[in-house]
Image (tube, rainbow over all chains, first blue to last red; front, side, top):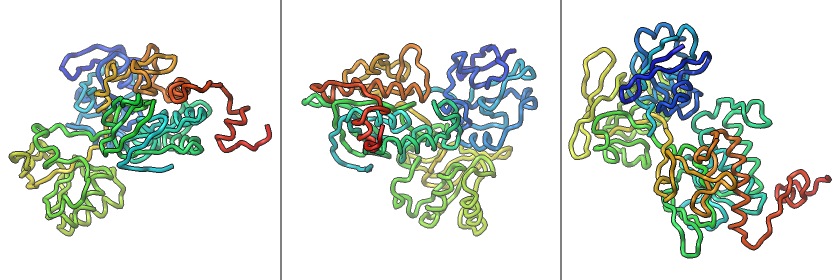
Length: 106
Length: 350
């Protein structure tokens, strides 16, 4: 299982996906710069990512809580998600995301 | 417990940060007869537990299969009550200096000065500060036309105000400032608000009555000169951008943690964390300790329980600085009558 993550500088990284892990945790565990300050509780919007359009339909739809939290992220787009709310599974093998504004570490 | 401002206070230990670890440090210090003053930028205790996830369940606090951030904060406040800590809320520890008498002095952004032989930095991820939108040239207007908080309502009297955001702060200030503003407009990225439904209804009623305007769009640009805003360019979804005339913007996009002035305390830093030893959790500067999420040592885990442990060991060494001539005796709360007396449970039969 893989995920492809483009960092804030535009560089793409191939990460080993871990079944049942939150995408935010996989990115953090790999060592890419992601603030994720609330630790995955959907409380801070600092794990903001843009999901590659071709993967949007395959994701579990956003809950109201996530939509609300996105209000605090800058530059929200139609493909914006909080990566702590995406659980890795076989169906998402190959998922492509880009670290979005608000996720950067100061 | 008291809350005080604009004063000089002398105490045993200055704790920077009133999150769970700072609060528990009051307990561990208190058992060893040390008094504490706490400084926190938030207006209430609890730190991240109170600001980020008050309602979220935490599952890894020893002895509590599940407890919310707010419940944990409330319990800690109750636990430290016997030790009468003094809180300096809504203030940021801005400067730290060594006095001639060997004590440390911490000065807050409100001008409060705290003096003590020991400082315990329990600042977590740093100070909670407003999240800023990513708009080009934003810095040119900050403090003159763009604000992230309302310090004095009067400053906004008669202004053409644009408020940005969809949470309680945005909606509350929209309602509070609308009556004194020359014009009031609210901008939010979607026509759905996470603020209290009652405030949202009141705002919509004002829009109905033409007393204010609501824009569903993102701010893309600021227009003006010399820090004085004249209008903002906004982008509604799938439509042409347009301009909104206003002379100030109040942006409410929540808070995020930044290390802040602690970076200038003269301590060694390792990737925005403060290195400490694992015996006393003391920094490379004698008398200054760092406990909880803000510290760094080999094997560090950012867990509340680690911070609790660190508080206990910090207190042992702090005692040696506060009472250099006294002998430290290690005692258990279960058996020591003197500890039980401090906790106000002293006359119970063993």
